[in-house]
Image (cartoon, rainbow, N blue to C red; front, side):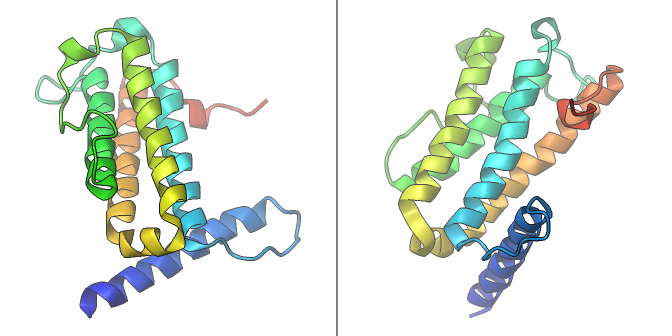
Length: 177
C-alpha cells in the first residue's frame, strides 16, 4: 500500500512538472495535463536529449578526461548511463533490446561516434518502450521510470561538472540563438 501511495504521489508530481513546462510555452493558453505515459516520455526525452547533446558536443580528445583520478572518464560516464538505461529497458521489455551493463567496457565503444550512437539508441529505445507501455504500463512501472530518469539527471549534473572543470560551458547553459 505504501508503494502504491508513493507511486501515485510521484506520478502526480511528474504530471504537474510536465504540465507546468507545457503551460510555460503556451503564452497563457491552458492545456490538459499530459497522461502518465506522456509525462514520463517528456521527462525521459528531455534529460536523455540533454545527455546526447553533451556526448555529441564534448571533444573526442577529451573523452578520457576525469575530474579526479578516482572517478570515471567522461566516456565511461556516458557508457554507464546508456548501459543502465538498457538494464531498465530489458527488464521491462522482458527481452534483450540493447547491451545492458552497468559499466560497458570502453574497448567495445572505442570512438566518440560509437559512444554517442549507443547513448542515443538507449534514449530512443526507452522512449519507444514508454510509448508501447502506454499509461497502464508506465503507471505499473512508475518507480523504475522515475528512478532511471533521476539517474540520467544525476549524471547530467556530473557531466556539467566535467564541462565547468574544463572551462567549458555546457550546451544547455549557452545563450540561445
